[in-house]
Length: 195
Image 1 (cartoon, one colour):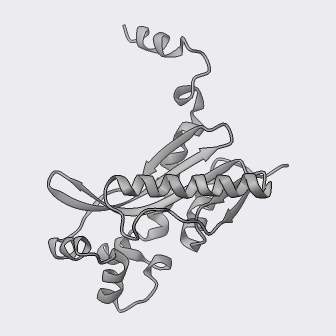
Image 2 (cartoon, one colour):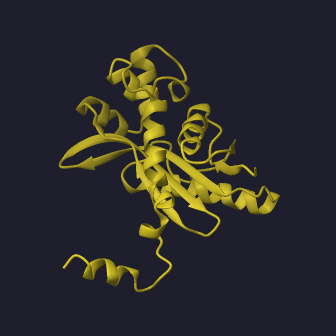
């Protein structure tokens, strides 16, 4: 059986494992490889930058695939950032998936609110991971529990958060007849069937 090959625009073990867990639910044989790429967004992305960073990571992985003839089927970018909604600030992570047919999809983790004093530090140029490392006295939170793990007292760690988000980003590929219709009349038929 030929494995489904997935390239991830990151060498972070948590990101790689989250992609492995999610894809393994839907594909019988999966081969995962992380690649060092540049997100081309600031180290602490805000709002749309987070979506752009995730997309850039996947597209960079796609370029490496084409250059090195790695024969991957999917390319994944994962980027964490901060989002302003309803005059409040939330941490979230964006997943972007691209396939060899140039079909694409976004998914996100859940949003959780950050305290004002952290936002002030972020807006002044700090990174969330550094703030959490100072709070927890643990280094390299990117590969450990992260902000979500710390703020939920260990109940929702980074791996859980990312795995669900990757699954959400996979939805259009799992339901491709709904998201990527081949028949141009499909959308008309769908709308007319609602009466």
